[in-house]
Amino acid sequence: MVPDEGDCPALRNRRRTGAKPLLVNVFFLVVPFAIGACATLVPTDREPDFSVGGRFGAVAGTAGASGDFLWRQYPSGFDVQFWGPLGQGRTHVLVEGDTLSVLTARGERVIDAEARDWMRSELYLDLPVQALASWINGHPAPELPAGDLGDDAFTQLGWRIEIAAWDEWDGRRKPRKLIASRADYRVTMICREWIFTNR
Image (cartoon, rainbow, N blue to C red):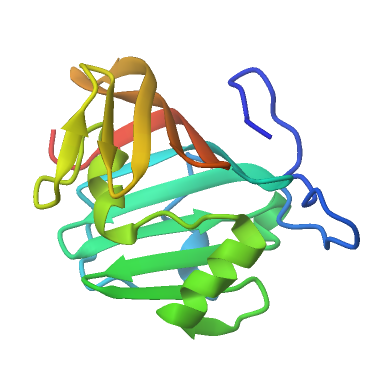
């Protein structure tokens, strides 16, 4: 279940018997800072360094999910939001330092190990949070060992990261399509728009 840039379906049901529907996709990049006033987690830093929005797809064996995302990067960490039409089904993931928090669409807050379990079971996202801020920018985390596979790919923490497409936003070269894979697990992110606070 991998998204492509011409396809915009609702966030799909998990591909297993009895799976409950996940979020429904609608991504509004023009209002990312306005919609978080209701149930949300508040980052320590008020002004993000950058934000990036687009689509994701995650596959774990025969199960998977896909939808839209908004990522905001801060000096202290990052937050990612997923939501549906008119803000329905919004889920908010916040990483600050070594702390991972998830605010579910039901308003429940889960932290660290419980949050990781929730993301694995609901979104099929089991990526190493300590490396994600670097990966989304198209390069390995500098503080961790990595293998060089050329200009468009590298390995780190048992994952293979491929930048399948690059583009330029405000004169900055950033990933348009990124694929992270390990064994039968695969995550694809298509970045529709990057917005930089510091121009």
